[in-house]
Image (tube, rainbow, N blue to C red; front, top):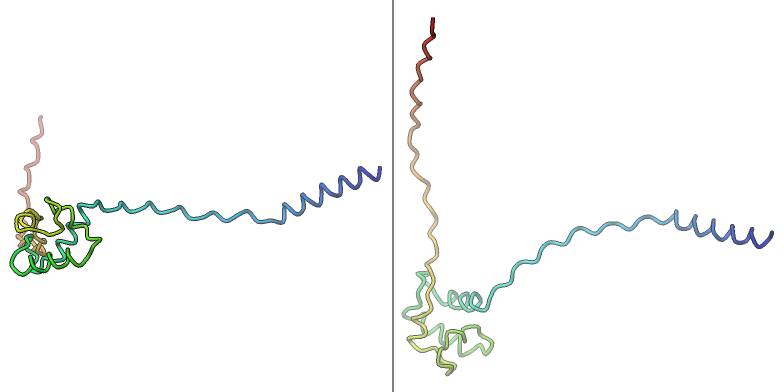
Length: 127
């Protein structure tokens, strides 16, 4: 009889302890990961950084800036434009780097006065 009482006391103690615990708080749903840029996009971003006048082409002093950036950074992504693999960007290779110019801010369309639609005549009633 004492054995049964001890077993029942243990069961009630564990049940009471479990009832005192609060349920675990739910974690907020994880945000979806941002898509990572491809190597081509990373290289194009480096080339765009050298484009000072934002015309979408590497010209003039920008060529010198791009070449020095490529030679100074051994981990540069610009290596994908180095077609002959000599670790130097030649004129032809730099000419092949193209993208669209940065978009200028759009101008609002001129506002036109709104003309009311002509009223429709009421349908004729049949007699």
